[in-house]
Image (cartoon, rainbow, N blue to C red; front, side):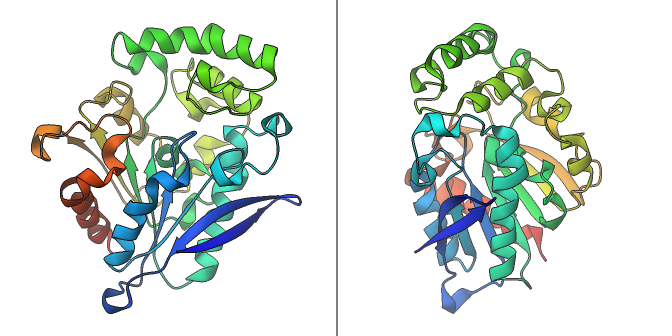
Length: 287
């Protein structure tokens, strides 16, 4: 595992970690593991090691203001939003990985926001395959009851009020990790729009998504109350030029019986079940 720094703009950088492929089974393919909102990259290290041990060159990272990429006080990131991550952070990571392995196909295993975001960035045309884990439209009526009602309250009242009072999005008001004001306000706006981020006024998500020509495979988790079949499936239509596009439902009963939910896919307890299933999908993406 190698620690790396990736420049973003003139003054910022991301901290990531590279897991080189096991030499004895090297496949000549690259993978970026994209984190969920507020989930630090350390959560994905064992999964990265697993993929590297099966021949992939793997990179994971923290978005600005999260984990090891939080290099200054949270209020100093006030103007960083999801649109900043989409327009600057993810493309910087994709560019860096391509520069390291320019001849290799590049796949992304993206968790939640890490899954719906990369193919609607300006670097979408550089992605050969996207495996989305619990990636979903966060338009609140698509979530399961009663969870959708808390989300409605959060986006209508809790997030706007807490960011105004504290100058950041406090962890107790959402995701257990303090986040920038703009991040909370953008998500609150998009979660009330039927087409979610694809109607964003901050950047051209629709246009970027049309440039995506790689394979798209989305895992809908049956016990994830946020990522219902409707919430996951609704993403697919926004990638009209994908080489292939499919949603697959994963049920705990089919993978050893352990709960999966929105977060647990990447826990080592699923190494011989869910991880091996994902490995087969990455291999199926081809070149």
